[in-house]
Structures are given as C-alpha cells and as structure tokens.
Image (cartoon, rainbow, N blue to C red):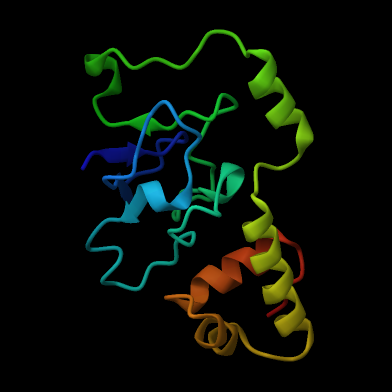
Length: 151
C-alpha cells in the first residue's frame, strides 16, 4: 500500500492505495482506503467503492480532488518510481473530460438518493444509517457538494 498525496499539500497523507489500485486506470473509490488514525477518529471520506470517480475522490482535509485533469493521483514516491502524468490528452481522455463531472451513474444515483432523503426531512446520520454509509460526515460532504446542505 502506498500513500496518496494531496494536490494542495495540505497535510496527510490521508489515504493509501488498496490492492485494486492501477496507475494505468481511471481512479475510483475502491482503489483507496482512509489511513489510521483518521479512520479510527471518524473522519469523513468518499465512499470506497468503484462508483466514485473524478472530483468525488477528494482530500478529506481540504476537499481538493486527488486526481489531476489527466485522471492521475499523486502517489508518495512517484517521481522515484518514474511515474509521470501524460504531457498531452488523447482523444478518449478529452471525450471523458468534456462529458461531465467524472462521476459514474452509480455515484449520481447515490447523490440523488441522499438528496431525496435529505429534502424529505431526514438528518445526515439517519441517511448514513439508511444507506449503509460508514460515517454521517460522508453524507454531509456529499450534501455540500451538491449544494443542498443547510445547518
């Protein structure tokens, strides 16, 4: 497992790679795990499943996306390993970037369900329990991201 570095250099490392991480594939939530002691202290993080991609894979401290515009994350020691982001964007990556926000259909559906439950009057903790999300702050972060959270 290798630590992931925040693009803003805000601290951490907060996440590490899992055995599903492949630097040649588009990153998704199943490729990362929240590090201790952050996990044990109840820090919120993106859902760690394959439906979470793009800007949704973000630093839990500052909210910056881990991936750059090429879909690459900063892996601790990457320069020593010779891993560099591509210098140009090929047609398939350009199409992906122009198609939307980097979320899969599954992640959009999850956000829609969270929004629906929140608007119906459920509290973030109740939504997290209902949907089997590990910590209610993940729900709060998603509600903030989709612009409906109010204290």
